Amino acid sequence: MTSATSSQTRIDVRFAKCKAEGRAALVTFLMCGDPDIVTSLEIIKALPKAGADVIEIGMPFTDPMADGPSIQAAGLRALRSGTTLHKTLAMVADFRKFDPDTPVVLMGYYNPIYIYGVDTFLEDAKAAGVDGLIVVDLPPEEDSELCIPALKAGLNFIRLATPTTDDKRLPAVLANTSGFVYYVSITGITGAAIPDYSKVGSAVARIKGHTVLPVAVGFGVKNAQTAAAIAAHADGVVVGTALVDALKGSLDENNRATGDTVLAVASLVADIASGVRSARK
Image 1 (tube, rainbow, N blue to C red):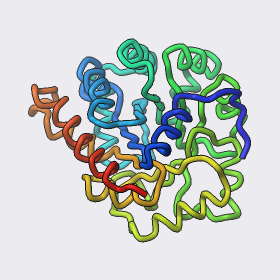
Image 2 (image 1 turned 180 degrees about the horizontal axis):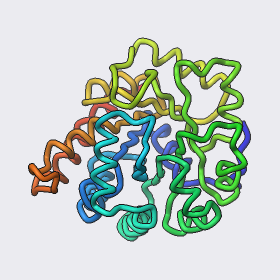
Image 3 (image 1 turned 180 degrees about the vertical axis):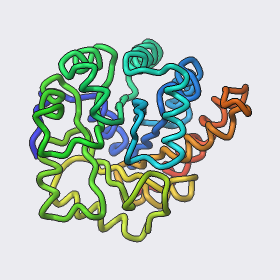
Image 4 (image 1 turned 90 degrees about the vertical axis):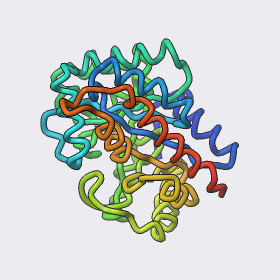
């Protein structure tokens, strides 16, 4: 595994801290601007206190091919509320005024970044306080497009591995990965099925045979129990769809935020965090 970053990022520091505490990290995902920018920022600000160690923020896109219905709907709500990539970066900058330490990862697709301009995006993302990127539609063969420039800019570039990523493919997937490896424990779109938790341990061990990076496991985490099942085997637990569903369930009939919206998400994060912290390895 190689890395073009010359110093530790917030992501490196946070995973090391969690390891020292003998527990997995909790990685939370929510879509920027869902259901609106103001509420979205308030939710993001509530996550660290609720127990989130790393915050993934979705960049809304019109053609989210790897996302399931819940996250697709969240992206549409965000786009309808006027969320853009510029506003996403501005929200991260606003969050940084409140929290200088919690790692922030932007997750999404390459098209909005390409339109923004790669060099300008990386400069603006770094200035806003972004720590890493997950761009699901750029394979390792396209590393020169964004991955290598991101690493040179001091951002982690986090890659996804799946049950179909075999030992022959893994070295290519991991070649320029940094921060952590995101293991998607089921095949298919987000939120579509429940993973077989009995296989998580062997899958993580297989990936660790190829890298020294932490391995965070996602897809299928819904509550403290499912989080604990994964946290027993992984360096990190990723939860997204369940949080998006909790947010959606708090909205009014016009998909607008209510007085329950922030608490609905924060309460579920706190519950899942309790599961993660109960699974001491």
